[in-house]
Length: 230
Length: 173
Image (tube, rainbow over all chains, first blue to last red; front, side, top):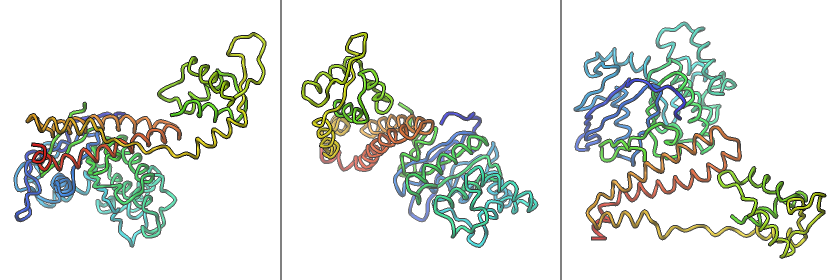
């Protein structure tokens, strides 16, 4: 929304290609993620949006092209190094929160820190702060099955931000919510990301959600196109 | 927007001077288009002539702005009927964008570029409205939402048309 300070390119994907069998999901896709900036990735179903996000996040490996995190080539990293990067530098929010059903909301948010070997007390202290920031401190002791969709998604945003990642990947984060809850999640996600200086990759097919971004990239038939503001 | 009906509706809460009425209108409905004084007084004169408002006292000092206006029973009936009559859903069958797309295809220009530049313009306006909505009160939010939902509908049309350009090219050529 133009209120944060936008900085350097933290993650850069260039000339990405990816096929699944005979299906060419990405033909020639490029994307820059800038710290403090929300970039919306839009396009029709099957255009390659999610494949682009998965490549950029190091979840799948592209067949061609390069992805650099702070000038470091993801392809040259060892698996363990890439996993650590995903855990500490990247945050993820999906359409359906994908919270661990057996854990409380507080434990879910603390989980990425615990996996990074932060002591339980400190992890839960930071998780509490993020639950408060996302206005869902009241559900800390509940399990995901006991909270509403909107609350669960805000818990998922808290979990994505708890490690202070450089990049947050949000794949249709409001897709399962009604308009009002979707807007609340977007407002909180964008504000929190701006505050921490994280770059956000927002995959969405909803224009009203994309309107929370600073810039838009359209994916069509596996190719990216940066639209210039009129 | 029927300004006479909006002014009549505002008078239902009690008599007002023309100046008060303008202020009340601007505050609630005039976000982008405040009323001109002349517009308020000419509307009130017409409502008076039609028996929908009446003068209720003139304060010392004279001048038209000193008159207080009150709604009549006929005015209340008129507001009631206006509120309960649905607005005609707007149709956009003579769409400029459609015309531009067809002309681009007929002349061998890039129709995709026409659609994309419109898309960027729409999204820019949607961003501005979203910012205004986030910083505004409930009235701002509802007014901006109304515009945002309409722009979103346009954007869907732009997307569907972009996806069907090849088909359209065959039909028009």
